[in-house]
Image (cartoon, rainbow, N blue to C red; front, side):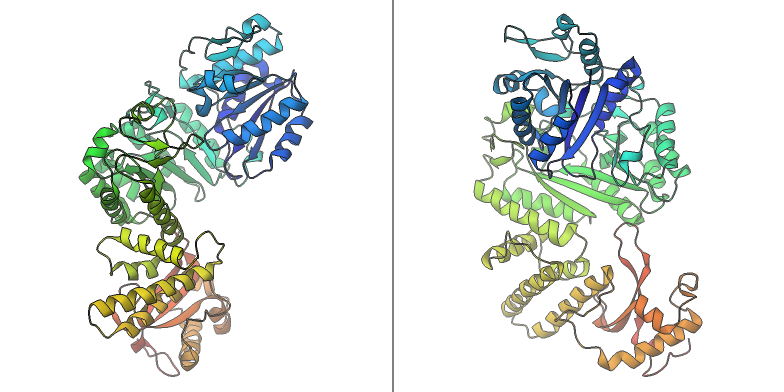
Length: 601
């Protein structure tokens, strides 16, 4: 008897913790040899997945279902049933748990749905199939099953598990090379956000620290690149938070990165101090702000101390060793366009490493789904059930925010336009307007929904900036637009060299012919003294090699500070920021250079 667990992930780099946990639990019950796992992504063609599962010849097929894969899953399963009509198909996961009867009514060939927490349910299912216990198959807690008479039977819920009774899912890491490892140290959430499925499960449970430490040590010893905790609010228990972060710090292998979803306003002084002491890049935090509108937060049952959140996010930011990813949700109650604009400004001004502008998804089983009529929330009936309009936002507003989201992804979250965007921000009271106008520029110039090479994005931003600067200068009756545009071009060039040692200069870059002697002299002196570059990293290289491996550029102002006056900037590609991967930059004043030599200090 072969039971195949099928996972369709959103990207190859992701793995599906659910199917590995189900198999580990069933294996502990003695059924490991009966279970196989097949993982694909939504980027595979459905025919490839169909061929793959058909060739495995399963006796039973069980599929993990989420909003991002459910339509793909349905398409594959319909074809699979056509060619293997006698293979029972079972579904599980959040996308089917809260609408099991409707799913069975739609997909007549599906035998049953595993509802909610699945380990014990799946183990019982495997046991029934292995023992050919047909009667038992219809009486498993935690299932909604199609009976012999084609009626639908809803069985009682499965009692929740002690998390220490769930075996570790990753004893073999060979198939997880270059993939994210998802890890679960708790289930449930202490909060009751109306849009979230975690609020439906009222029980908050923790895995014992003894087990957590042993399992994390295994992942650390095996030099896993990233471990992503799926705990809904990791820092809801301070002593536990400190214990795990201290363990990670003490066992840091210099490679593994740990991702946590936290409520920033719950962080205390001890936790902030510990975070500040970590190796840069060891930890990254995802912080769901969602909105800065107090009426909105109240309506979605999200208690948050916004002032404390700002203070704590700023404290983490100032340490510059922890990547912070802040989230906003558009389409929530009481949030109109102006309110969202202010929420955007509040979060943007916290200087997150990434700002995720998401859209409300009205999930079956949540409080938001029950309240959607009250709030006049119109949402797509197809996954991911995303908001189309609300009492406060029209569909036009949603489309406007979609444009802003795209510009934020390209010009902020990519990290490729740091100085350029910072330079443009000075022309706006609220940076939301910058991204809105950028989206308008793409629309008006027919640039939207077209593929663009990286250098094209810089040229597009230059065109936008030239229009913006000319308009602003005209409104202010000013006469320094030429200098402003020159400075902006230098910011673009700075951003390009910050990431890569370019082989050819972009068209908007100024000529450097007159500075070649100075730069050559600088490298000759540097090869002797290593005043600016690390002798440990560059000792074996001569001046020509140093010039090739690094880059020096002349600027008419300092793009890092905005300070006027000529500076030279040296880009060191052997030393990079572990959070952003930007090259180290060394600012060298013009007074340090002469036409053919380096002045003595």
